[in-house]
Amino acid sequence: MAEAQAATNGGAESGGGLELHPLAQFELKTYIPIHIGDLNLSFTNSSLWMFIAVAIIFALMTLPTRGRSYVPGRVQAVAEMLYDATANMLHQATGRDGRPYFPLVFTLFTFLLVGNLQGMIPGAFTFTSHIVVTFALAIAVFVGTTAIGFVRHGAGFFKFFMPEGAPLWTAPLLVLIELISYISRPVSLSLRLFANMLVGHTMLKVLGGFVFALGVAGVIPLAAQVAVTALEFLIAVLQAYVFAILSCIYLGDALHLH
Amino acid sequence: MDVEAAKLIGAGLAAIGVIGAGIGVGNLWASYYDALARNPQAKNDIGATIWIGFAVTEAIALYALIVALIILFAF
Image (cartoon, chains in turn purple, cyan):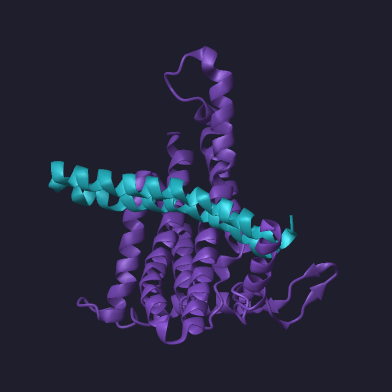
């Protein structure tokens, strides 16, 4: 009896709900198919929006600084603020040794920031909502910082996995825990950004479906929608910041070993 | 049990994980205001790190939501 009722409820819920699937926005559309052997290098909407992101960053960083005035204009002030924020972030996490890696961190931060923010444009594609993109970036940071650690400290880098001052007999357990936490870094780094973007945009679509379905009473979910949209803007900036600062912290670990 | 019904129940159960993140985020901001009340000058020092803590804690809720979404849509 209860089972039958649940089944009919389930059928009604999934059948008569939204016309557009809330996950349809994440669909990849191939614009220019490029296949090299088994490799699929097609130009998709994801690649298109990545190119747009790079173009926006390039324009923001080069055009307003052409004139190079002491009193910056509005756009130049934005570019300088971004630069300052990243430089501060890197300096706090790594100190002076981190200087050479500023271009990497700045590129990561601006790319993800613009990528997250342009996802808030209605109809735009959020390329950071695909785990392929975030995991590729995270694994690049992971492999890069590990390589830097080994180049700087040689075999001494393995000391990183044994906290200082811990008694020697705890080593087997501690090294195992540290190793697992080290290896899970790229997973948590990429999953955090991907999950935030995916769930945030899905939530916006689901709430939007409520507004549409409820008619006049849709004003109530509309108010929630406005609040959630504001929250999404905060999250878009915050997640790019968190990704960049965690990369800085990992870099600092590799440079200074704790 | 019908698969469709089991899916909905499973998604609902998966979303319970959000409770933990809710407690965590509440705890985080409670400690933040507690710290500010004790030492208002530390605001700038705490300012940046609190957001990292917030993002890391909030991500736990999203993992639960991802599981719920996978159960609902991917199977």
